[in-house]
Length: 511
Image 1: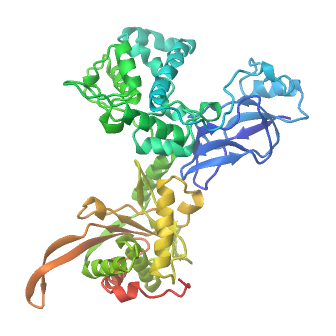
Image 2: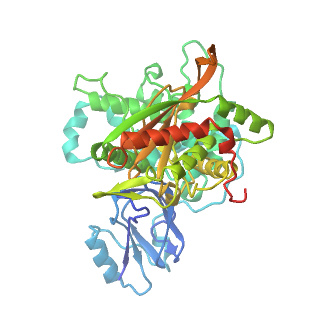
Image 3: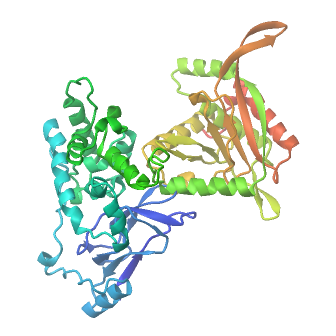
């Protein structure tokens, strides 16, 4: 019998997944262990390998669609399957009226699709800028082929003509075939993937395509005339065809340029607000990633179910600053975050009751000290975990922390990199934040909030002088700790940070 490929559960907390990229097309042969697709989970973008060999006869869930775990996303034909079995399986999936894909011996009957191609030779910037514009034409031509729901027809008829042309803007950027690295680069540079001509398999956008597009934009920049609005070539053409005044559109592209995405948002806003009298009330809608959805659910659960309380202590930051400058002079790149991770590990060793969790009706201590470090990546917040911090040196912890942060920024973290944290550090000092409290990440019982280093007058031996202070806030699960124990822990953390020799203790790990 044909095998149904279902949305896999790729992490213990995953409830749904977004299908980023199909690596195979309908009619393609697949081998066991071959990468079949890429899925965005609540933890990371992950590849999924085929567990059977056969022919991919039906793709049920298209790129960009989000479905629950266990949902059938494709149908694979095994060597022993008959045409009747294939037809029965298609009918079961609601596709009985769809003709089965061509057998492997007759590839000419399979639907036409662009062939896989190697990385292209670099094109000239002028060609790169022109390619996306040329690619826009078939999108517009293909749009009428998608029938609109009958119930929506009267509403569409009442909308302005240019609003009904929203189909011109398809496909959605989230449905564009692109490699994870290309998506990350496009996000970092505020680029609309639908404007970039892909040179990878099946037209997938590669990282090199993104770089080439950026160079083309920079080299084709024309001298600005008074009143000109910076825009990408595709956006200029679309605005002209749809009669849109670009000065009314907020640009979010490179250098503040108006992009195709901005025009889509502008017309989407017109469509939503037409006839409602609330044109100025609502703006763009932001599609949430699976990781952002998971974080939202987790924080709601934490605030609803965990009785938080908070305490704060000021720490003399001068010893940390002096240590950092001394190590920097010796060629080391130790940061304040590294020092805080080390200090937290030492304080948790001294107060194991803090390194614990609430489980049903009892308190359970963790066997290990795993410190999660919150990192902002684009418009998302992730917290990779530095594992087994007990007894390790400052340099060893710094190396692991830097590696995790680097992989987080490259969007290369896997589910295990987020797993099993027992304590979290959230540092907003680099953003100038004076004071804040973070939300506890279940099942942890504490979270440390680190604010900026500030200068202020302090009294030392009866004399006023300039001192450096940092505010450390501790969010605590009151079921696990009371105020006294939490205060003792925070006082120990303060004592470690104000004693550089303790931060430099060799943890005995050989580093």
